Image 1 (cartoon, helix red, strand yellow):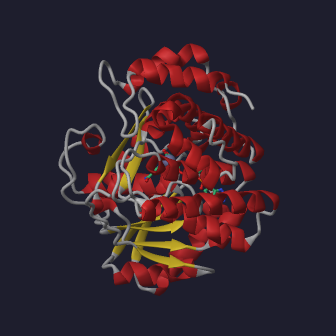
Image 2: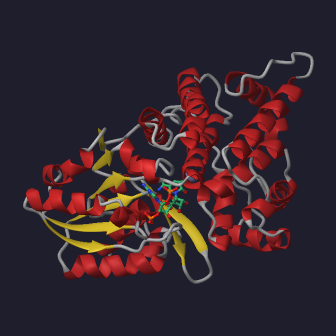
Length: 393
Ligand code: NZQ
Ligand code: ZN
């Protein structure tokens, strides 16, 4: 196990009707004037926005609102938010939504108190030194942004999707009422489930040995997702299944399942080019990319993939031919994704094979390599896109 530092200061407030306490938590964490940031309408339609603003009023906290965040949040909305926060002297941001709204809030939190262009943080031109505090009312179990220090934004011009990370933008509190996720359409639910599993796999495939504790936590999250996801697809109002998935989504991405080891993250980098170019859901892009990545890299550590196949996918170990077991595990993963309604190849996602050179170029590796488990070149990435393009069950 490697040395590590684990910092997860977010106060998680979990359970039925907890959104009504939002005002209380803003006050507790020092907010006096709030930007309530939300998405394209689900929070308005469900009455959630109303309940959140009422709880702010009850706590005597002033607020302004800014909606309209789209999935794969854009820089243009961030600039609008920064201007509003400055004009209105906002000192706390409450995100009501999923990863997209939370990431947009985090970008606004960084940009409001920065003299330059907030995009500097996303292209490595500047390192965050301060930020407004952010709190969240989560409406979808997926990105894990409610407990992470990350934010991913897409530059409207050119569809360039990039991320930044800092402990400064870890939410001060996250309110998590599983009931709020019951209005999610099955497709969005499945996209979220895929993302949660991907966050674990990015950490599970590691070259670091003897990280048994972290391995077992990873497996617990994956087994939970394999059990609970079909339950919510079958019955969107299954509170207990929604609750387990919601907590799994957070545990998957605070990094508690990744400490003490090298991590990979190539599938995310490769996927971000798809959602950047086609504006598809991040989880759907991962469903297409992650099994393809696994097929491409499995020879690097066949026993690791065989172990995952046995422990996570319930395969029988073939001691004479562990590669067979490894490949069977990957196949079960892809079948699971298909069964919950995810695309598994380019055609089903709406991506085009002829765009592969563009996708590779946009990733910008040049002659370099990227990744923690297997270091990939541009040619390797192109090959993974080709595998993904033609994947079938
Ligand atoms: O905008 P509204 O109307 O709210 O609709 C949203 C959106 O269309 C809808 N939705 C959310 N909650 C709902 C609901 N519809 C009905 N009922 C509800 N309760 O779902 C759609 C997707 O929402 P979005 O916020 O985009 O989903 P998600 O949480 O998957 O976030 C995806 C974004 O997060 C980034 C992704 O790249 C993507 O841009 N990521 C952020 C990470 C982080 N900050 O740590 C890590 C991830 O790996 C990921 O890259
Ligand atoms: Zn993700």
